[in-house]
Image 1 (cartoon, helix red, strand yellow):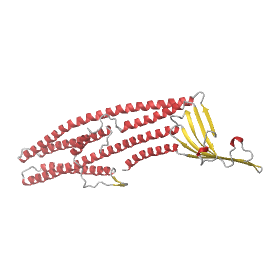
Image 2 (image 1 turned 120 degrees about the vertical axis):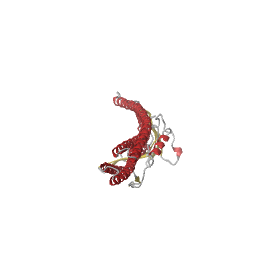
Image 3 (image 1 turned 30 degrees about the horizontal axis):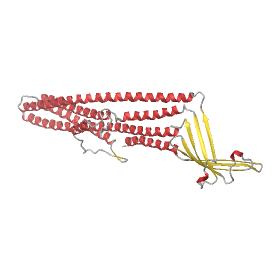
Image 4 (image 1 turned 60 degrees about the vertical axis):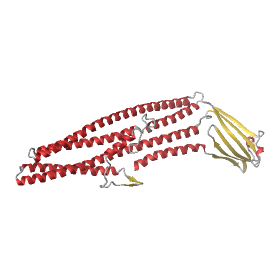
Amino acid sequence: MYPVKQAGLVRNVGDAEVKAARGGFDPRFVVDYKGKEYKGKEYYNLLDAQLQIPTWYGLKLKGGFQQSQGNYVNPQNQVPEAGLFQAGLMLSLGEGLWINSRMAGLRKAQAYRQQSKAEQQLMINDILLQASFVYFEWIQAHQKQNMFENFLENALERYSGIRRGAQTGDLAGIDTVEARITLQKRKIQLNQAQVSLNKKRLELSTYLWYEDSPLVLKEEVSPANTQSISETFLSSIPAVNQNLENHPQLEFYRRKIEALEIEKRYRFNKLLPKIDLEYNFLSEEPENFETFNAGAYKAGIKFSMPLFLRKERGDYKIADFKLRDAELELNLKDQQLEAKASSLKQQLDAYSEQSEMIDQMVEDATILLDAELRKFDFGESSIFLINTRETNLIDARLQELNLQTDYLKTQAEYLQALGSNPLE
């Protein structure tokens, strides 16, 4: 179904973010060319081509080629006519040594990818919970239709018998009016049940897909028995981790906290002075490795540090506040999930007790109706009393169906509160 596919896009975005973050470690080819010519004189042509390879920590490998020509080349830029090759490295001490923007970006992207997986699971669980609710309502509508079909059949049989009795003079003619009213009432109830069933069938069809094609639930399809569904739910509950440790909602906040911890360490690292060391071996013959030696090199050091560190200190505090806020969110969500699971468990226990009582009520109403029908056959009752008994039985059966549906919905919601798919 499309909502589930949309949930899958969340995870795809997380994978794309990791891929983008890994791009910070891609080798980079840099070319710097400068030239000047004025009044027919070639002042200079300078070429500096480099291949830079970032590594995990604050180390960058590099290799390059320099060439210069012209009448007014700065002495520091003069190289042999064939050019000069270099191979070396750049090392960041202080800021950027243990963590830098590349490392922080990749680690945060990996945490966000795991967070997106948890978010995807949450979305799928919500969709499946909605689908399970509609499925249970479809079952209820199907059972209502079957129930009113049976009661209509009984009402029709009773009306036919009473009409024959009235024609022979064994029963009063007014009894046929009472029986006909009941018959019409059962027809209306059946029609309403059929309309409700069609509505629920179409609503359930919106959750049925094969690849990219929607499916339509056929009228001849019958639902499973509610007792077997309930037993399936109950059997899966003990297998769920009761302490909610694996709940995707908590996993979502844990990964968020992980990313914020990385951001906090990165912002703390920005408080350190920036010290960049660079050392390059120089050679005119790169094919001869021995020509790269300590006798020909180019080295340098660069130091910088803000005097007041106001921006860096502010960014660090912001990162710390965001981290603390996420930790509070995690604790709150943990408590909310535990409270919700506990509340739903109490509802399940209450529904279990109510189910026994409503079953007894249906059984007693059925006994009373059967007794009233036998008394009517002996001429000791009336059609009015039979209709009253039957109405009580219908009310009891409807309460039973509503309770069964609420019980199944609560079981599905309880499984979701524990972090499990309701329809797994």
